[in-house]
Image (cartoon, rainbow, N blue to C red; front, side):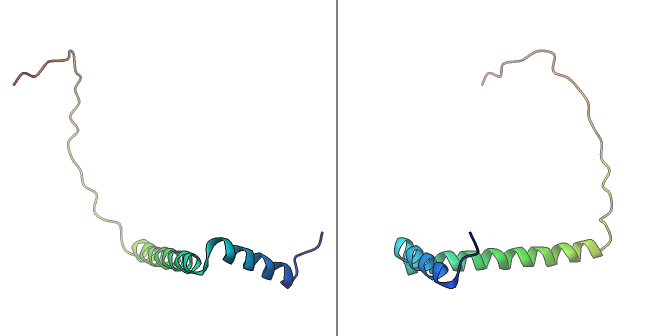
Length: 75
């Protein structure tokens, strides 16, 4: 059970082309390329965000309470 030769991969490629068709494979390739491009852009933006100082911390008020009984709203 060695590695596949070039002839094995060519046969697999022909079978895949027969099953899916070239148009669908082209669309899948374009979608995959767009996803990789978006991932790379996101990684670049993440690097830029990591280099910038963290945003100022926003402090707010926390209101604590509890519901004692359920009230019905009548219109």
